[in-house]
Length: 156
Image (cartoon, rainbow, N blue to C red; front, top):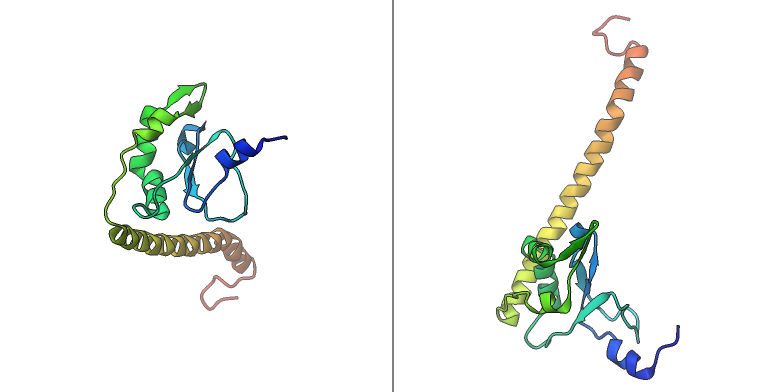
């Protein structure tokens, strides 16, 4: 696909740019993240919103957490246009999204706390998944013991 130098300059991603989906399934509306310079000279697709903030005032991680919060999801869903199971937002809706803006120090403290809680949540979820796998195997193990006569107390 051919693209002009002007378009490349306009669409080029910079560290900290917030990237959001324009539309899709209602549960995925407004889903996004921030650009971490994973690829040099990368542009975004036209159905992705790019929002650029002053990094001296806003932490991209903090903004990303706000957008992905239940508050953010509810806002985008409440303001979306929906047709046949597809929900979309526009730039006007995006611009009206109210961001909390504590000091950068406070934003970092909040992000560190949320990162810690997310890591704890992930660890707990992994432990639960391991337990579920074990529980799913129990009926087969119990049946095997029953057929081997290992379930009876002291009798063979």
